[in-house]
Length: 505
Image (cartoon, rainbow, N blue to C red; front, side, top):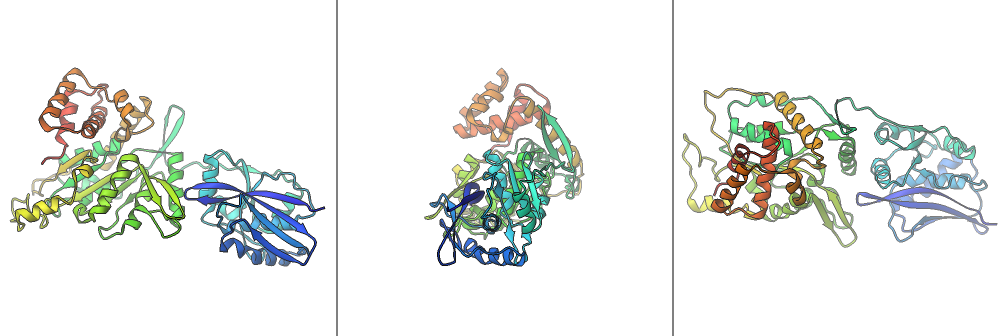
């Protein structure tokens, strides 16, 4: 009688893992070995790795017609981690496998050594997020990264023979991996949040620019989109590079999400509870910014900046179609990549930071250097940024020229501590999102104005002709200012300061 055994494995479809059942059939006939079920070339190559590893470990290859089926057959599968489940099913073809729901992952060396792959972490994390995995056989070397994923029982193996013995004897020697981050912690409503006090680039190094520093603090508190304008050398890039050190703490799920995106980009993450800053050059292509590819969509800079900062220096020099395409992730916090063979959605919950000169030569606001640009050139330069794009920026700051009297007045550590205090306030209010990312219904719930503040906002709407999106932006910024000032309601002073950060002209 033909015996059919199976294990569970998985394949990535964009960022989401799909459960794949690996099953084998052994029938009489001319010896053959085939893999069916839309398997990619790296899975087809596994046949040779499986044969070699079984033979070198003294396991006889059965003289039968072997068919390996990857089900469901209408999903394209890829990855070298299918080697181990295939080899185990062949080696144990005469045994009854009791735990057929066991997940098995691993690439095989020709000597039977079980190796890890960069896809294991995104796969297992996605399965865990979907509630589909409780236990798995994994390469021992992969535990260095997989230990960050909790609530999964891992059986770590080094060699094929070891894995075969574990399955054959139904070993229960499993361990639940936990990891304690080497960082400061904040406990809010029984949830842990992590941050690091590392300030390689310190705001104390920036002399003067008190308005820009204040705006940086407000932007960091709520992860508000932030645009700086000023003459060359006034410190715009210095401010942007220091922002990532003072951003709010991260939850464990956010740390894992950042790590998953890095793995998908081929980068080995350090799992540091620190938000990323991505700063692509203005000559970067749309595919490198948003992700893309002719057949399989790849991750881009916007997705890699998830939970961190996307910094565009020399903002007007970026291609206008690229800036217009950025409106979607700034609004919806998602990136949609559509290709003939794939449609993928990436998370892009980021803080956008831009820097620009006031004119092409940069000297329009200078009191010392004369501007060389004509009115037409200045208008053309500013018209590269459309109003719908600028409407998604919460805070606008015009930076001042450097003066000999400028002093250093605040450190990154002081600013970071203030951000953490306001982070606690936001979470204590019951906010799932930071102020800058609140939805319309949440704005009405959490951004409550005092009577005086309401009158000021109504006056601003009539005077400046504010759009619905601008009004929401002002409320969110004023909520962050009120948190910094320790106000339960948004007061008159808070709303006035928020209005001062709106775009002029």
